[in-house]
Length: 248
Image 1 (tube, one colour):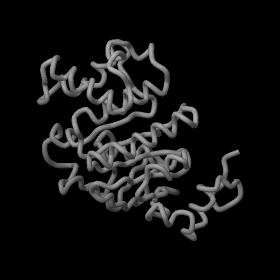
Image 2: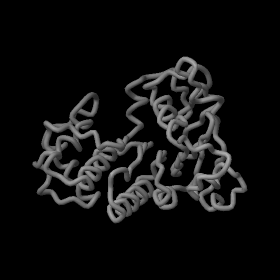
Image 3: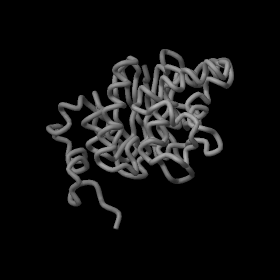
């Protein structure tokens, strides 16, 4: 579904991506790990076309991201943002249905409302919160509203940016289970960026570690613990000593 070849991106003298090669299979869940500042978010933004890479190619669903209809391209994606990114001035149901009320989707408010209620129920939220505003919800509820919005238009590809950031361990587990269930039910292709190793183990079919601007290791989740790669081993076991230098 996503094929990235020899991708490079630098900001001045700061080289962030230095030849990334990565394939993400259709209807699979890929989790991207790596230290802060290693280029995970930049990679995601390059795929979406929010940042232009310096060189390399990105093919999504058989189409080069540099060509074709931009709106049709973005219609393939859903996104769960790290900070929730809900619109404070809109009630919950309009947050969930935001995309359905825009552009070529342009459903009636009644139809969009019905879909929003359905998606809220899918993520474990009752319909009575639909008229509340984001500020009236807990962090875990806001995250679930964000997940409902991400799946509202039935996207083929869903990006999850640190889906459990700021949540307690129990709610993190709830979100991880929801993400996994929804991806499997929809048959969607998922790409997740996370530092949370419990999320990695709960969500991933495959894992890719980015270090020094390249994919240091990639493979099935079942091979992660016995990869033999010293960088990956240090990262997943949170060791201070190893080839990755800790910034002090």
